[in-house]
Image 1 (cartoon, rainbow, N blue to C red):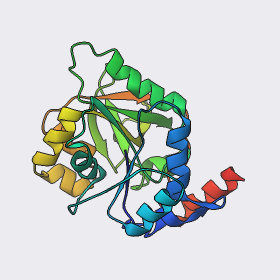
Image 2 (image 1 turned 45 degrees about the vertical axis):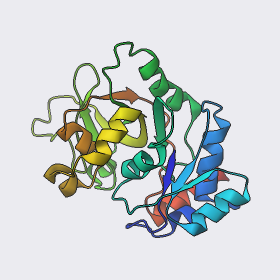
Image 3 (image 1 turned 135 degrees about the vertical axis):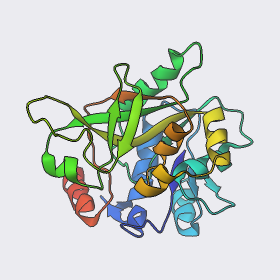
Image 4 (image 1 turned 180 degrees about the horizontal axis):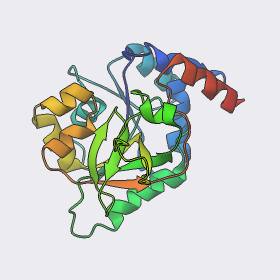
Length: 237
């Protein structure tokens, strides 16, 4: 499922921006299809503009019937009546998503025989302090089994003791959900931490869900700003 909102707050209409001759959302949809990992790939949107551009290439679209605060809410509505076990959420602004990373989070559920894990997601190590301090970069800290402890737009952990080595991880906007976790998400009200940080993954933590983080070294480019789009265009060339 690729949730796709036309009016993004930081960069309106970013999913319809040109990337190598096609809109960003089309590049993301094609990248997801080309991994060969999925039974089906859908774009989930409330925008007729995005819907039409996906349908024009023969793609599958689900139109949202309600107003949603987050991509997870949007996907929860879309899969409500579907007979599925695990749903992968690929953000619409991730045209460089790769099959290796996606395979890793799918494998989490194949290895989880007791079905204790509610979600899986990706993180990648970062070392540039400008990126670590950038509020557009969501950071995650994990326990010794790589379960998420917290997500933040602030640098976490805070470097009070500069002698102590710590790896900083950027959270990549790709999730894999058990369907039941999505169903719960849709019913549970937003709590203050999620509302403050504007990071939907925090809602799962606030309600005690287990999120397994998987490290990947494939960074790609998430298109959050016009500057990201320019970098993406250079890489695409």
